[in-house]
Amino acid sequence: MTTALYRRYRPDTFAHVIGQDHVTEPLRAALRSNRVTHAYLFSGPRGCGKTTSARILARCLNCEQGPTETPCGTCDSCKELSTGGPGSLDVVEIDAASHGGVDDARELRERATFAPVRDRYKVFIIDEAHMVTTQGFNALLKLVEEPPDHVKFVFATTEPERVIGTIRSRTHHYPFRLVPPDVLEPYLGTLCAEEHIEVGDGVLPLVIRAGGGSVRDTLSVLDQLMAGTTQGTLDYHQTVALLGYTDSALLDQSVDALAGGDGAAIYRVVERMVESGHDPRRFVEDLLQRLRDLLIIAVAGDGAEAVLSGVPADQMERMQVQAKNWGPRHLSRAANLTDEALRAMVGATSPRLQLELLIGRILIPTTGDGPATSTVETESAIPGTVGMVGGGAPFEPQPNSGNEESFGAAQARAELERKRRERAEKVPETKTPPAEKNHENTPVEEAAPSMPEENSWPQTATPPLGDEETPAQESPVAATPAKTGRDSDMLRGRWNEVVEHLASISRVAWT
Ligand SMILES: [Zn+2]
Image 1 (cartoon, rainbow, N blue to C red):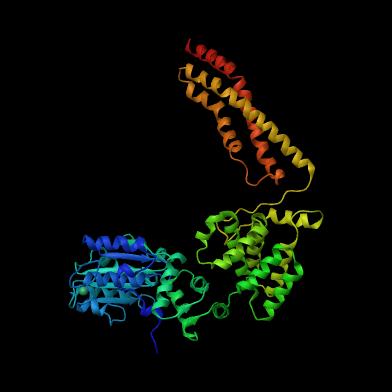
Image 2: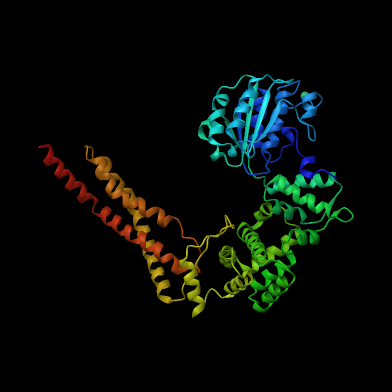
């Protein structure tokens, strides 16, 4: 029986830890300058290298040539703590999930008083530290605060907020992060090469997606796939089937049918998909992912390829055509509806029904008379979020087809433009009067007329989202500045009167 992939490839130096440079760099710097503190808190999602880094830190500290950031690898301590090694007597790993009670803490306290058996430090790695009970933490408090010189602590936890504050404040806190795909993909590539496994196009992005940014989970997925390979090749279709993802060809057909408004075709795809045993929820999830990709292509243009680096070239070409055909506005709306449907599908008794409803909603035209328009209006009334589609275009409700609104908007725009021109002409002369006055009332009185000006400028200066196709949307935005603009114009026009009046009041006050 072979050892699991993530065990075999577990790094034993900081240089080999991937995606956590923000943690490993300062730790290495501390080792270089011999400023390693006595207690650390490593937090972050599971499978991101917290415990591994704790072991590496122990290895660096206890190397015969150390403390060093590059353990020699030949001394007894280095060998024992290397990948696949038996572990060292002076590095004690405690799983707080099963040993987090007050008695365990007291025992640990006792053990800490003894000098290391052979090496420089006794390093205690407390895994799942959030599982230590409050009494357990309290028993450790004094020790963590003022440990003997030969003792180092590393607390590793997925939930740092559950580690009591008094312990947390006595540690240096290093948050680990999920590893991004652009770091994982080349790493998995070299790993597959070392394992003599050939990887088909588009396989690694699927593996990375299944791993969710956790290195351990990603390697477990890859391990499972590798175990099932025939003739040392990871094939795309095999991977899709094994991981239960929707085949990209099926997604292509769905997207083409939806973008083209071909209801018959898309319902045929659903029929086929459900018959072949796919989970409708998974399909909707994959559809949302695809819509997100298309939205990125639609709004980021040439920059999209950098964002979607894992997508094979031919797939990218197809998606560019799809994004162009569907258009950002409709994509955004479809993504919004899909996101809502996905949430509605949680615990739904008939996910297929939800899927078919979703398709219907996407296919309903966004402009036109009768029920279609009213549906869209109801949807836009709900403050929908785009969910997974972070950074995509905001959901834009479609305008009504009425003529009155557009006329009103045009009027408001013309009015606004006129005000803006007038204001531009008046600005120089309105600025002068306050400078001439110099008595204690000036700052207070000056603030009043200038406030409306500040309020109206940003609203008129920033163009509302959307373009010429949505005149009705602009009307509420345009109406506000027009009103405040009028007030400030009135005030500016009568500024000299105000100044004179104030001067007379002040004179009365002085005499
Ligand atoms: Zn060594």
